[in-house]
Amino acid sequence: MPDPRALPGRRPDRTLFPLAGDSVRKCVYGIGPEAYDAMLTSQGNCCAICRQEFRHTGTRTTANIDHNHDTGKVRALLCENCNRAFGLVGENVETLAAMIAYKLEHG
Ligand SMILES: [Zn+2]
Image (cartoon, rainbow, N blue to C red):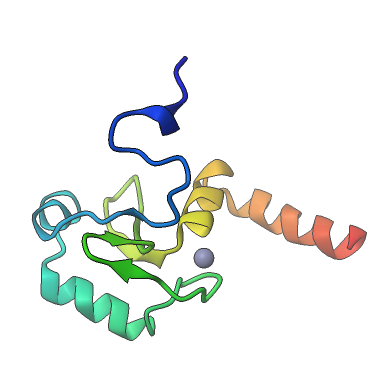
């Protein structure tokens, strides 16, 4: 399997992630530009989980729209790490709680 980072248009060293344009956000998530900007403002331009500040340059941003995959409801904006980690554990709250307990127990 080819390295996905080697696909055309992907930079292996990228630090910013593709910004879904206004039309994509509206089509996929039902969020218009005003609602998106309101989310950024209400979150203080920070990830809803780790509070890392989002970076935006040109057509790229580190803000990811998190949504419930069952209902499609948009929850909040997350940084790439939190969005990915949340998905990797299947958004399973028992797993997330077990991870916290594990960390507290083992340091
Ligand atoms: Zn985060």
